[in-house]
Image (cartoon, rainbow, N blue to C red; front, side):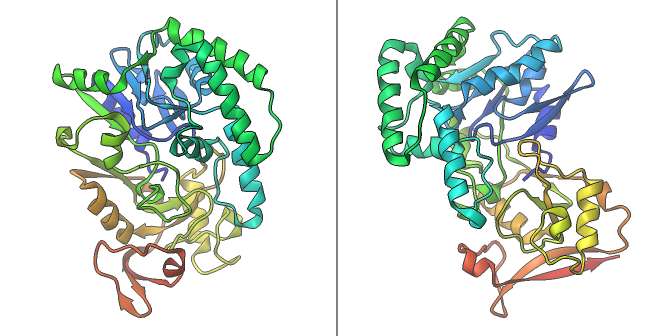
Length: 378
Protein backbone atom coordinates (compact mmCIF):
# COMPACT_ATOMS: atom_id res chain seq x y z
CA UNK A 1 0.00 0.00 0.00
CA UNK A 2 0.84 3.71 -0.12
CA UNK A 3 2.73 3.40 -3.39
CA UNK A 4 1.45 6.60 -4.95
CA UNK A 5 -1.79 5.30 -6.50
CA UNK A 6 -3.45 8.63 -5.71
CA UNK A 7 -0.67 10.60 -7.37
CA UNK A 8 -0.83 8.53 -10.57
CA UNK A 9 -4.63 8.69 -10.58
CA UNK A 10 -4.36 12.44 -10.14
CA UNK A 11 -1.94 12.76 -13.08
CA UNK A 12 -4.10 10.62 -15.37
CA UNK A 13 -7.55 11.88 -14.31
CA UNK A 14 -7.22 15.14 -16.23
CA UNK A 15 -7.52 13.10 -19.45
CA UNK A 16 -10.75 11.36 -18.46
CA UNK A 17 -14.43 12.21 -18.30
CA UNK A 18 -15.32 9.99 -15.33
CA UNK A 19 -13.24 8.98 -12.31
CA UNK A 20 -14.74 6.14 -10.26
CA UNK A 21 -14.02 4.47 -6.92
CA UNK A 22 -15.03 0.80 -6.75
CA UNK A 23 -14.09 -0.33 -3.23
CA UNK A 24 -13.38 0.69 0.33
CA UNK A 25 -14.33 3.81 2.20
CA UNK A 26 -12.53 6.36 4.35
CA UNK A 27 -9.80 3.80 5.09
CA UNK A 28 -8.06 4.89 1.88
CA UNK A 29 -5.67 7.82 1.82
CA UNK A 30 -4.81 9.64 -1.39
CA UNK A 31 -2.99 12.97 -1.42
CA UNK A 32 -3.66 15.02 -4.55
CA UNK A 33 -2.37 18.44 -5.53
CA UNK A 34 -4.31 21.15 -7.40
CA UNK A 35 -3.28 24.75 -7.94
CA UNK A 36 -0.39 24.27 -5.55
CA UNK A 37 -2.66 23.04 -2.74
CA UNK A 38 -2.71 19.58 -1.20
CA UNK A 39 -5.96 17.71 -0.54
CA UNK A 40 -6.22 14.49 1.46
CA UNK A 41 -8.95 12.32 -0.08
CA UNK A 42 -10.21 9.25 1.73
CA UNK A 43 -13.57 8.48 0.10
CA UNK A 44 -13.70 11.06 -2.73
CA UNK A 45 -12.40 10.17 -6.20
CA UNK A 46 -9.38 12.29 -7.11
CA UNK A 47 -10.95 13.67 -10.31
CA UNK A 48 -12.90 16.25 -8.32
CA UNK A 49 -9.94 18.63 -8.61
CA UNK A 50 -10.54 18.82 -12.39
CA UNK A 51 -13.62 20.86 -13.38
CA UNK A 52 -14.49 18.72 -16.43
CA UNK A 53 -14.73 15.35 -14.63
CA UNK A 54 -17.71 13.61 -13.08
CA UNK A 55 -16.79 11.40 -10.12
CA UNK A 56 -18.61 8.26 -9.04
CA UNK A 57 -18.49 6.38 -5.74
CA UNK A 58 -19.52 2.86 -6.76
CA UNK A 59 -21.68 0.20 -5.18
CA UNK A 60 -18.61 -1.66 -3.90
CA UNK A 61 -17.83 1.19 -1.47
CA UNK A 62 -19.10 1.83 2.04
CA UNK A 63 -20.10 5.48 2.32
CA UNK A 64 -19.76 7.68 5.38
CA UNK A 65 -21.90 10.58 4.12
CA UNK A 66 -20.71 12.95 6.84
CA UNK A 67 -17.10 12.29 5.77
CA UNK A 68 -18.04 12.98 2.13
CA UNK A 69 -19.10 16.53 2.98
CA UNK A 70 -16.14 17.04 5.31
CA UNK A 71 -13.80 16.22 2.40
CA UNK A 72 -15.74 18.43 0.00
CA UNK A 73 -15.39 21.49 2.27
CA UNK A 74 -11.66 22.19 1.61
CA UNK A 75 -12.31 22.00 -2.14
CA UNK A 76 -15.03 24.64 -1.82
CA UNK A 77 -12.71 26.78 0.32
CA UNK A 78 -10.11 26.56 -2.45
CA UNK A 79 -12.64 27.74 -5.04
CA UNK A 80 -13.07 24.34 -6.73
CA UNK A 81 -16.69 23.91 -7.81
CA UNK A 82 -17.86 20.33 -7.30
CA UNK A 83 -21.59 20.93 -7.82
CA UNK A 84 -23.12 18.24 -10.02
CA UNK A 85 -19.79 16.43 -10.33
CA UNK A 86 -20.04 13.89 -7.50
CA UNK A 87 -22.35 10.90 -7.85
CA UNK A 88 -22.92 8.05 -5.41
CA UNK A 89 -24.35 4.70 -6.43
CA UNK A 90 -27.74 3.99 -4.88
CA UNK A 91 -26.47 0.43 -4.28
CA UNK A 92 -23.49 1.54 -2.14
CA UNK A 93 -23.70 0.63 1.54
CA UNK A 94 -24.04 3.33 4.17
CA UNK A 95 -21.51 3.56 7.00
CA UNK A 96 -22.76 5.09 10.26
CA UNK A 97 -21.28 6.27 13.54
CA UNK A 98 -22.13 2.99 15.28
CA UNK A 99 -19.94 1.10 12.81
CA UNK A 100 -16.98 3.12 14.10
CA UNK A 101 -17.99 2.39 17.71
CA UNK A 102 -18.07 -1.33 16.94
CA UNK A 103 -14.79 -1.17 15.02
CA UNK A 104 -12.94 0.49 17.90
CA UNK A 105 -14.41 -1.86 20.50
CA UNK A 106 -13.52 -4.97 18.50
CA UNK A 107 -9.96 -3.80 17.88
CA UNK A 108 -9.50 -2.93 21.56
CA UNK A 109 -10.82 -6.35 22.56
CA UNK A 110 -8.09 -8.00 20.49
CA UNK A 111 -5.51 -6.46 22.83
CA UNK A 112 -1.96 -6.83 21.52
CA UNK A 113 -3.15 -8.96 18.63
CA UNK A 114 -5.12 -6.31 16.76
CA UNK A 115 -5.50 -6.27 12.99
CA UNK A 116 -4.29 -2.68 12.69
CA UNK A 117 -7.70 -1.42 11.58
CA UNK A 118 -8.12 2.31 10.89
CA UNK A 119 -11.17 2.26 13.21
CA UNK A 120 -13.16 4.02 10.50
CA UNK A 121 -15.95 1.43 10.71
CA UNK A 122 -15.07 -0.23 7.40
CA UNK A 123 -15.06 -3.86 8.54
CA UNK A 124 -18.31 -3.61 10.54
CA UNK A 125 -20.02 -1.81 7.62
CA UNK A 126 -19.08 -4.60 5.21
CA UNK A 127 -20.17 -7.10 7.85
CA UNK A 128 -23.59 -5.41 7.96
CA UNK A 129 -23.76 -5.69 4.18
CA UNK A 130 -22.86 -9.39 4.23
CA UNK A 131 -25.50 -10.04 6.88
CA UNK A 132 -28.00 -8.43 4.45
CA UNK A 133 -30.80 -7.61 6.88
CA UNK A 134 -28.41 -5.34 8.84
CA UNK A 135 -27.18 -3.30 5.87
CA UNK A 136 -28.68 -0.07 4.52
CA UNK A 137 -28.03 1.30 1.03
CA UNK A 138 -27.62 4.88 -0.12
CA UNK A 139 -30.73 4.58 -2.27
CA UNK A 140 -32.88 3.94 0.78
CA UNK A 141 -32.29 7.55 1.86
CA UNK A 142 -34.70 8.64 -0.88
CA UNK A 143 -37.54 7.10 1.13
CA UNK A 144 -36.74 8.70 4.46
CA UNK A 145 -39.85 7.84 6.45
CA UNK A 146 -39.30 4.16 5.79
CA UNK A 147 -35.54 4.60 6.24
CA UNK A 148 -35.97 5.94 9.78
CA UNK A 149 -37.85 2.81 10.82
CA UNK A 150 -35.26 0.59 9.14
CA UNK A 151 -32.38 2.51 10.71
CA UNK A 152 -33.80 2.26 14.22
CA UNK A 153 -34.32 -1.50 13.84
CA UNK A 154 -30.83 -1.93 12.40
CA UNK A 155 -29.11 -0.05 15.25
CA UNK A 156 -31.05 -2.02 17.84
CA UNK A 157 -30.04 -5.28 16.15
CA UNK A 158 -26.39 -4.22 16.26
CA UNK A 159 -26.75 -3.26 19.93
CA UNK A 160 -28.01 -6.75 20.73
CA UNK A 161 -24.99 -8.21 18.97
CA UNK A 162 -22.28 -5.88 20.26
CA UNK A 163 -23.75 -4.30 23.45
CA UNK A 164 -23.11 -0.56 23.11
CA UNK A 165 -25.00 2.65 23.89
CA UNK A 166 -26.05 4.91 21.03
CA UNK A 167 -28.19 7.99 20.50
CA UNK A 168 -30.38 6.91 17.58
CA UNK A 169 -32.39 10.14 17.42
CA UNK A 170 -29.27 12.30 17.26
CA UNK A 171 -27.86 10.19 14.42
CA UNK A 172 -31.15 10.30 12.53
CA UNK A 173 -31.21 14.09 12.75
CA UNK A 174 -27.68 14.24 11.32
CA UNK A 175 -28.56 11.80 8.54
CA UNK A 176 -31.66 13.80 7.68
CA UNK A 177 -29.62 16.97 7.21
CA UNK A 178 -27.00 15.18 5.13
CA UNK A 179 -29.74 13.55 3.04
CA UNK A 180 -31.11 16.96 2.08
CA UNK A 181 -27.67 17.98 0.83
CA UNK A 182 -27.31 14.77 -1.19
CA UNK A 183 -30.67 15.27 -2.86
CA UNK A 184 -30.14 18.99 -3.45
CA UNK A 185 -27.09 18.25 -5.61
CA UNK A 186 -28.63 15.16 -7.25
CA UNK A 187 -25.79 12.96 -5.98
CA UNK A 188 -27.69 9.68 -5.65
CA UNK A 189 -27.81 7.79 -8.97
CA UNK A 190 -28.30 4.29 -10.32
CA UNK A 191 -24.55 3.69 -10.47
CA UNK A 192 -24.67 0.62 -12.71
CA UNK A 193 -26.80 2.37 -15.31
CA UNK A 194 -24.79 5.59 -15.01
CA UNK A 195 -21.36 4.04 -15.59
CA UNK A 196 -22.55 1.80 -18.43
CA UNK A 197 -24.38 4.62 -20.18
CA UNK A 198 -21.20 6.65 -19.96
CA UNK A 199 -19.19 3.77 -21.41
CA UNK A 200 -21.68 3.18 -24.23
CA UNK A 201 -21.66 6.88 -25.14
CA UNK A 202 -17.89 6.88 -25.54
CA UNK A 203 -16.92 8.59 -22.29
CA UNK A 204 -13.37 8.00 -21.08
CA UNK A 205 -13.45 6.27 -17.68
CA UNK A 206 -10.66 5.66 -15.16
CA UNK A 207 -11.20 3.68 -11.96
CA UNK A 208 -9.25 4.23 -8.79
CA UNK A 209 -8.29 1.43 -6.41
CA UNK A 210 -8.41 2.27 -2.73
CA UNK A 211 -6.07 -0.33 -1.21
CA UNK A 212 -3.19 -2.56 -2.27
CA UNK A 213 -3.44 -6.08 -3.70
CA UNK A 214 -2.00 -7.65 -0.53
CA UNK A 215 -4.89 -6.11 1.43
CA UNK A 216 -7.50 -7.82 -0.74
CA UNK A 217 -10.01 -9.75 1.36
CA UNK A 218 -9.44 -12.98 -0.61
CA UNK A 219 -5.92 -12.68 -2.02
CA UNK A 220 -4.13 -10.65 0.67
CA UNK A 221 -2.32 -11.60 3.88
CA UNK A 222 -5.50 -12.72 5.64
CA UNK A 223 -6.63 -11.78 8.27
CA UNK A 224 -4.41 -8.65 8.05
CA UNK A 225 -6.41 -7.34 5.12
CA UNK A 226 -9.21 -4.91 4.39
CA UNK A 227 -12.85 -5.94 3.96
CA UNK A 228 -13.31 -5.46 0.21
CA UNK A 229 -12.00 -6.56 -3.17
CA UNK A 230 -9.02 -4.31 -3.84
CA UNK A 231 -7.83 -6.04 -7.01
CA UNK A 232 -8.94 -5.49 -10.61
CA UNK A 233 -11.85 -7.91 -10.24
CA UNK A 234 -13.40 -5.37 -7.86
CA UNK A 235 -14.02 -3.04 -10.80
CA UNK A 236 -16.66 -5.42 -12.12
CA UNK A 237 -18.28 -6.15 -8.76
CA UNK A 238 -17.84 -2.64 -7.34
CA UNK A 239 -19.12 -0.66 -10.34
CA UNK A 240 -21.08 -3.07 -12.50
CA UNK A 241 -18.75 -2.74 -15.50
CA UNK A 242 -18.19 -6.05 -17.28
CA UNK A 243 -14.55 -7.29 -17.25
CA UNK A 244 -14.54 -7.26 -21.07
CA UNK A 245 -14.85 -3.46 -20.98
CA UNK A 246 -11.44 -2.94 -19.33
CA UNK A 247 -8.82 -1.67 -21.76
CA UNK A 248 -5.85 -1.79 -19.39
CA UNK A 249 -4.84 -2.23 -15.75
CA UNK A 250 -2.04 -0.03 -14.38
CA UNK A 251 -0.07 -1.25 -11.40
CA UNK A 252 1.75 1.06 -9.00
CA UNK A 253 4.66 -0.07 -6.82
CA UNK A 254 7.41 1.60 -4.84
CA UNK A 255 11.08 0.77 -5.41
CA UNK A 256 10.90 -0.60 -1.86
CA UNK A 257 8.06 -2.12 0.16
CA UNK A 258 5.92 -0.53 2.88
CA UNK A 259 3.11 -1.62 5.15
CA UNK A 260 0.94 0.31 7.61
CA UNK A 261 -0.22 -1.51 10.72
CA UNK A 262 0.07 -5.16 11.66
CA UNK A 263 0.64 -8.15 9.43
CA UNK A 264 3.38 -10.28 7.87
CA UNK A 265 6.20 -8.49 6.05
CA UNK A 266 8.96 -10.86 4.83
CA UNK A 267 11.37 -8.17 3.53
CA UNK A 268 10.89 -5.76 6.47
CA UNK A 269 13.85 -3.71 7.75
CA UNK A 270 12.22 -1.38 10.32
CA UNK A 271 12.61 -1.99 14.05
CA UNK A 272 10.72 -0.40 16.95
CA UNK A 273 12.19 3.03 16.13
CA UNK A 274 10.10 3.03 12.96
CA UNK A 275 7.09 1.17 14.28
CA UNK A 276 8.36 -2.08 12.78
CA UNK A 277 8.48 -5.68 13.96
CA UNK A 278 12.25 -6.28 13.68
CA UNK A 279 14.31 -6.47 16.90
CA UNK A 280 15.78 -3.16 18.07
CA UNK A 281 19.00 -2.44 16.18
CA UNK A 282 18.64 -5.50 13.93
CA UNK A 283 20.80 -5.69 10.83
CA UNK A 284 19.43 -3.35 8.16
CA UNK A 285 17.17 -1.44 10.58
CA UNK A 286 19.07 1.78 9.90
CA UNK A 287 18.27 1.33 6.20
CA UNK A 288 14.59 0.85 7.09
CA UNK A 289 14.66 4.04 9.12
CA UNK A 290 16.36 5.82 6.20
CA UNK A 291 13.58 4.70 3.82
CA UNK A 292 10.92 5.85 6.28
CA UNK A 293 12.52 9.24 6.90
CA UNK A 294 13.60 10.15 3.36
CA UNK A 295 10.43 8.70 1.87
CA UNK A 296 8.20 10.57 4.37
CA UNK A 297 6.43 7.31 5.12
CA UNK A 298 3.52 8.43 7.28
CA UNK A 299 0.02 7.10 6.53
CA UNK A 300 -2.40 9.71 5.12
CA UNK A 301 -5.43 8.14 6.81
CA UNK A 302 -3.97 6.91 10.10
CA UNK A 303 -0.92 9.12 10.70
CA UNK A 304 1.00 5.95 11.56
CA UNK A 305 4.57 5.32 10.49
CA UNK A 306 4.84 2.94 7.55
CA UNK A 307 7.01 -0.09 8.07
CA UNK A 308 9.67 -0.29 5.33
CA UNK A 309 11.68 -3.02 3.63
CA UNK A 310 13.36 -4.15 0.45
CA UNK A 311 11.44 -4.49 -2.81
CA UNK A 312 9.60 -7.83 -2.82
CA UNK A 313 9.33 -9.17 -6.37
CA UNK A 314 7.48 -12.25 -5.14
CA UNK A 315 4.62 -9.96 -4.10
CA UNK A 316 4.86 -8.11 -7.44
CA UNK A 317 4.64 -11.33 -9.44
CA UNK A 318 1.71 -12.54 -7.36
CA UNK A 319 -0.07 -9.19 -7.71
CA UNK A 320 0.52 -9.16 -11.48
CA UNK A 321 -0.85 -12.69 -11.73
CA UNK A 322 -4.12 -11.60 -10.11
CA UNK A 323 -4.48 -8.18 -11.76
CA UNK A 324 -2.89 -8.72 -15.19
CA UNK A 325 -1.07 -5.39 -15.32
CA UNK A 326 -0.74 -3.72 -18.69
CA UNK A 327 2.01 -1.52 -17.25
CA UNK A 328 3.79 -0.95 -13.97
CA UNK A 329 4.55 2.46 -12.51
CA UNK A 330 7.60 2.33 -10.20
CA UNK A 331 7.76 5.20 -7.70
CA UNK A 332 10.20 6.67 -5.15
CA UNK A 333 13.40 5.38 -6.72
CA UNK A 334 15.16 8.50 -5.45
CA UNK A 335 14.63 7.42 -1.84
CA UNK A 336 17.27 4.74 -2.46
CA UNK A 337 19.86 7.11 -4.00
CA UNK A 338 22.11 7.28 -0.94
CA UNK A 339 22.26 3.54 -0.27
CA UNK A 340 25.50 1.79 -1.24
CA UNK A 341 23.87 -1.56 -1.96
CA UNK A 342 20.30 -2.48 -2.83
CA UNK A 343 18.68 -5.84 -2.15
CA UNK A 344 15.72 -7.19 -4.08
CA UNK A 345 13.66 -10.11 -2.83
CA UNK A 346 13.40 -12.44 -5.85
CA UNK A 347 12.05 -15.68 -4.39
CA UNK A 348 10.65 -17.34 -1.26
CA UNK A 349 11.79 -20.56 0.34
CA UNK A 350 9.54 -22.49 2.72
CA UNK A 351 11.11 -25.39 4.60
CA UNK A 352 14.11 -25.13 2.29
CA UNK A 353 12.04 -25.47 -0.88
CA UNK A 354 11.75 -22.66 -3.46
CA UNK A 355 8.16 -21.66 -4.13
CA UNK A 356 7.17 -21.53 -7.84
CA UNK A 357 6.88 -18.01 -9.33
CA UNK A 358 3.46 -16.51 -8.59
CA UNK A 359 2.79 -18.67 -5.53
CA UNK A 360 2.06 -16.93 -2.23
CA UNK A 361 1.55 -18.74 1.11
CA UNK A 362 -2.10 -18.49 2.14
CA UNK A 363 -1.73 -18.79 5.92
CA UNK A 364 0.13 -16.79 8.54
CA UNK A 365 1.78 -20.02 9.70
CA UNK A 366 3.33 -20.61 6.27
CA UNK A 367 4.23 -16.94 5.80
CA UNK A 368 6.12 -17.03 9.10
CA UNK A 369 8.30 -19.80 7.64
CA UNK A 370 9.29 -17.77 4.59
CA UNK A 371 12.99 -17.25 3.93
CA UNK A 372 13.53 -14.52 1.34
CA UNK A 373 16.08 -15.07 -1.43
CA UNK A 374 17.78 -11.78 -2.30
CA UNK A 375 19.82 -10.43 -5.15
CA UNK A 376 22.21 -7.59 -4.25
CA UNK A 377 22.92 -4.66 -6.55
CA UNK A 378 25.78 -2.18 -5.92
